[in-house]
Image 1 (cartoon, rainbow, N blue to C red):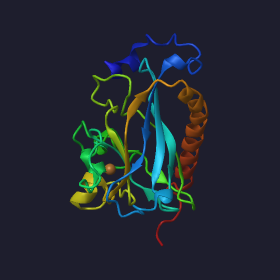
Image 2: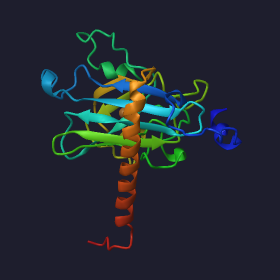
Image 3: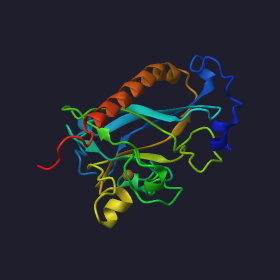
Length: 239
Ligand SMILES: [Cu+2]
């Protein structure tokens, strides 16, 4: 099984990982604005959108990485970002489908856990609970994330995410911390403003893009570690 592959040791001989394009499986997800969203639906130049790529070593020896950009989002805030179960049916007629992103299901949640923060242990979050999209003053988000809960290389695994959708919500994800059904199920994230389907790609170009993205992910993760160290509980929180 995929998860056991991490422990077998049979993959130690993978020399020069990252140098060989064929070592990696790649998936892409190209955001489209939701039909019927309240966010600038007619303003095609400023529609919320984004492009994301997922990469993982084909032998299952590495964890899943997700990187990309979101744009035309609310500035200087964060947007809830999840994997939802099942694909969006983009063939649905926009004239009669008010919420095409809702043709995908609820959060991808093979363990039937409650919703939680992206950095929780899997017992306290959904597999589909991704790190939020943090935006700059222009409403852009540069995104880099890695997770051990999800894969794109073993279609028999419960955590296989290809064929599911990724969704950007209008609001901040409250990470299940509020005492309400909406919070515990979905983070009170508001409407789905854009969505995409996770599809495999065999374009070798993405591997070259990913060489840069790997650096980005490392930088972002270091930054978030620095921030969490800086806000450690030694400071006074009484005011
Ligand atoms: Cu969602």
